Length: 149
Image 1 (cartoon, helix red, strand yellow):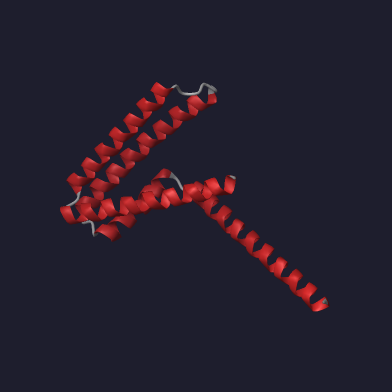
Image 2 (cartoon, rainbow, N blue to C red):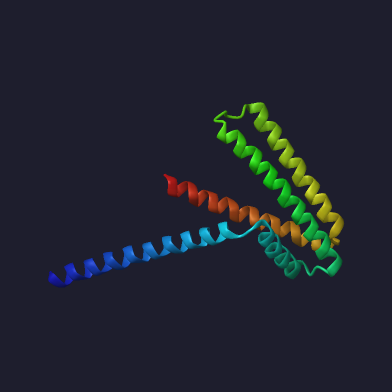
């Protein structure tokens, strides 16, 4: 009986320690991600795209400019959204729809620009990467929602 009790305590202790370590790793990852500047994120993404799509120097320069433009626009959207949030006024349905349309138009414009920069094979790979990233984001969102419950 004594051995069973000790084994149970040991099991509970190891299980709780493993969970604490996992949570700390997640927090460290989030903190590291938050500390990156937009320029650092753009450089990291450019390196990743260069290796995955085999971009040449001209394509790298064009993609770098596209990423910088996209980052600047995203920052403006973020600031506008934060200003609305700070005013405590909830956006109306029309405002949400307008924002959604604006974001879709921006996404389509970026896709068109990438299609102009990349060749057909690279563009196909890029679209596949985009889909993978979208799937990963959905999974993370689902995990986040499950944690909240």
